[in-house]
Length: 235
Image (cartoon, rainbow, N blue to C red; front, side, top):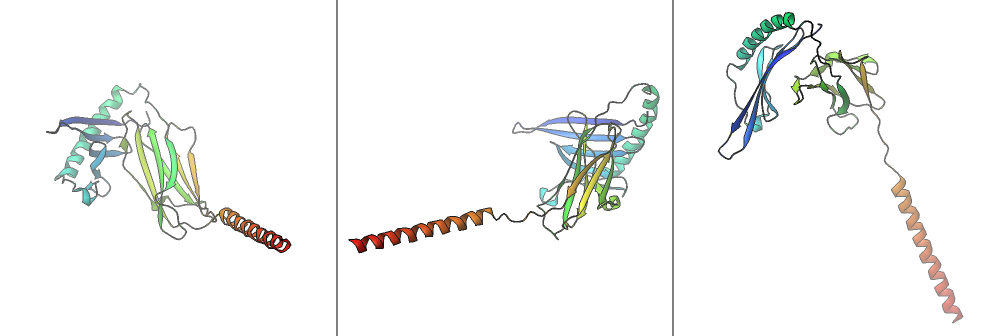
């Protein structure tokens, strides 16, 4: 088995005095290549552990008044040790069972409305895949720029598949071509999505039609005035 991921998901339902229900999610995941610890509520990510920088990260913006998670990163590291210990045992117990595979559905789009020369962000979104390891590669005009991109945490879906995002900061220039290539074990071949910087020229149609209409209208007024004057002369 090339990749085996195990995860523990704790879902709690809390009733408030107003009768509203809130859902809390605790996700602990590990594999041969990845590890993740995340807490969330009602579909919103509250906190996750950044194992590369060895710190905990509050995911919500400051204006939302996010709560603190004292000792959260240390708790995440402890859970990783437990997860990897269990992983070794589960590999032996389930080595003959096939791992379900769902290929990612991929798309690429800019974060903001594109303007030439204005800094923006390209987003490569891959969704509904399992198991949760995806390799992403970016290019600009055929040159690899993956080292300038970032990769988000895994986000679980209700159907036990995952979402993930990769971001690339860029300043659009006319004619530039960007690609995002996603590799996953459920794909027969890498899936590449392309984003080309094209600037649409303003449409001249409405202006032309307006000018023609105004010309025809004025011509009609002049013609009517001519016949009116000519008629008065004969009268």
